[in-house]
Length: 212
Image 1 (cartoon, rainbow, N blue to C red):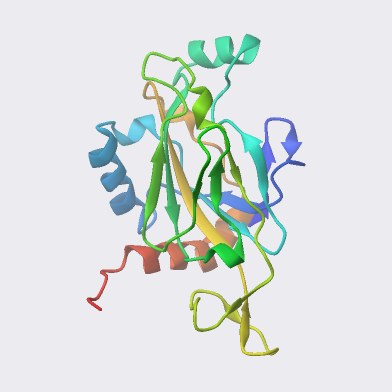
Image 2 (cartoon, one colour):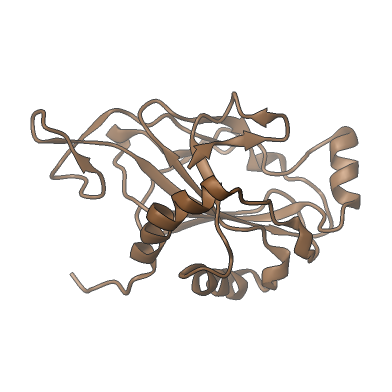
């Protein structure tokens, strides 16, 4: 995975690492098909799924998933695929509140903690291109350690029977209009990283859940 990027290059406000996945590589087609059913939009409306990892202290400051004003908004509206109108954020691990890493909506006073296998769905803009100011959100910093008894999704530490926390998410953004070229390019380093680790994590999420 590589340092997360924004339009200006390597992000100074999002300190995670991330990579865009190939839509055609297992288990992405099955996951995308679920998003198609959920949103009633074809896969051509969607960007490639983005896998992101947040380690200790990493975060993403308050932001919108689509431009909200000025020239950026006008350009996005007139682009081939238009604005992002739906965000589907898949949690690939479970974190307690003590671990941080929640998704926070400051205008709504709402915080959502990651729960493995669950998705957070919200709408950055309406289908006719009006941004929603209440969609402002942040990825809260991940804290360092968690109790083994409370979290089984992370790597064990040698100290005090605790585990080092990593937050893993996969995000799919849905646009107003279809456009095959709206998919970010994936460099060779990213392909190698996601081939070893990212697809394994997504396969774990996609695996049938056993009853408990």
